[in-house]
Image 1 (cartoon, rainbow, N blue to C red):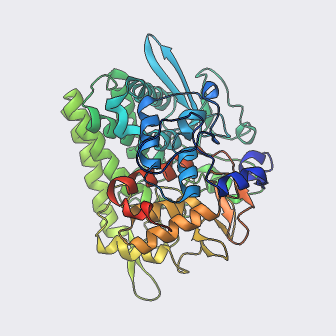
Image 2 (image 1 turned 180 degrees about the vertical axis):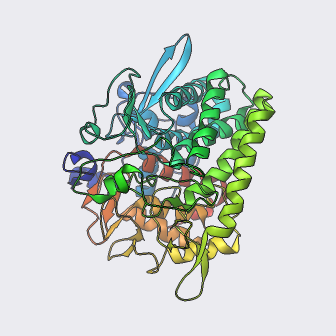
Image 3 (image 1 turned 60 degrees about the vertical axis):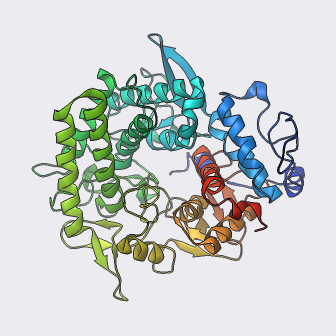
Length: 490
């Protein structure tokens, strides 16, 4: 980002009494609880006071109690209790529209709704939705809000709370693109639409509730398919272009805003990565793989919840076409002879290997259910991502992991450690990731965007709900599937 982005770029140092409290494991939920078997829970906490929490779910509070009692390490336990409800505590703005729930979910320190972030932020609570009507309203309200946002502009990645308002993001005010009212930022990222489709599918799979899948959702889903087809760019460059004046080349698209050249091979162009950085080559492979999965998921909802076979067949056909192109164009050979998924390609034969911590990433393909965890090609790719073969893999004295150009060299995104742990079956790997996550929070009790690999007290974004929720999701999954890794010392 440019110089007008202090909230995303500034390096913060936190500690003092907060760190001392964490060391003793006292930063837990702010409400006293009755004694029960397992690990005793302190009554003081690092969460907002109950009266200050934006959204309260009885089911989530019960889940916090259940899981926290399984975590033997006091600091890890404290971090879980802080992080898991962070989206609900601080970012959810509920209201109604035409008598139906409306949920506007901000990223944290940026008061706008990203399609990607908002979906990822609420999904860790989905398994509890049958236990709490308030969560039903949250998911129905967010699916509706995302559908209306997509119909404003399917090329936008972020939206304003007021759909009639112009952007108030300082870095987006002078963007050379078609900025419509309600749009906060207009960076075209394939995964923005994929996450919206994923949110609807996961909710449908969990509940079989047809209420959110109304005519607005249907039109938004058609817009998703239409936009992804436009960005295959088979006969023209399509309607999207974007330029921004910035001292960071990753903030704008080259060639008068149309992006780098490509050959139409059936893959989908993405102007930007999920990090909000511009693509080097326009076919972002992890995003295309996510599109294949998300299109098929949306097709199943269209068919089952709406009985719309036309939309389902259209989405499925596009997914099949992209999958065929991925098999031909999506892989590359590393200098040591290993065959891996590429990060970006251009259809002319040029390919680039790297990985970025933001999901969809190559490392995150199994986590997103785009490939099986046992898939040999993905496992080889993931190993290469977590090694010097990836120019954005950093190993320091405090932490190792994947970063990206968004923050800079030597900056590890804890998100990458979480995704690696979720995707791994190796208890040694999972324990190592947990230890590094625990020991690099800079005494705050929360997960940050990026931390310096040698000095984790230097970090970006002290309020980043996506990373907090992802960490909470990891602990819940371990509690359900590998409780032995939580009940013993790290």
